[in-house]
Length: 167
Image 1 (cartoon, rainbow, N blue to C red):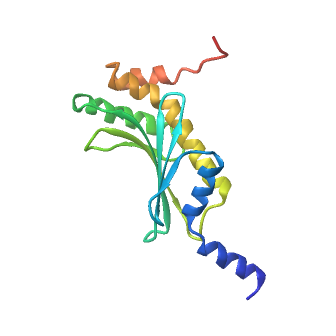
Image 2 (tube, rainbow, N blue to C red):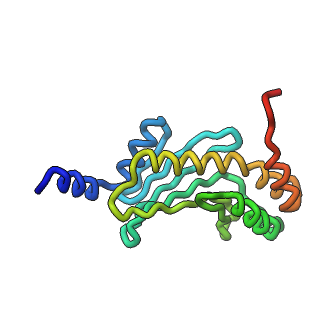
Image 3 (cartoon, rainbow, N blue to C red):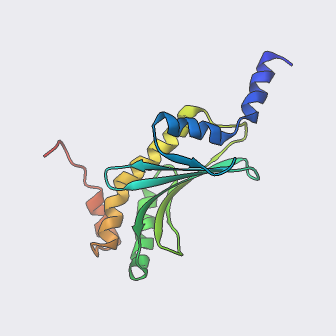
């Protein structure tokens, strides 16, 4: 076996969640490994505590990633929230927001296909950074819609205002 083939085959044998575990350990985020195919960790943000969930899916050779925050949508506000999700998702270039129907929990989701083994560490870092950034960016819109009683267009407009400098 050539050195190149050996490197490629050892990379294919790596579990993508081992790479995720290295990433969360390097960031000193508390995590729990739930078997070979699932890892959950917590990350503090400006607006909320985020729960990151990673799951390796062998049947699709993919890594599923979700980022949830504890902002549950009351049944009476779910119609407006669905409309807001459409507006928010139009502004994303990677991943999407969803709402779990059972409990109204808002979740950012992204799936990475892994046709040749685990992704490079930098690709994984970028997916996590993007998810946390988008959660922070749109949390106020969800908050305005759910608890502020704002309509979807008003909620997203308020959240999209860019501030300059610091007060």
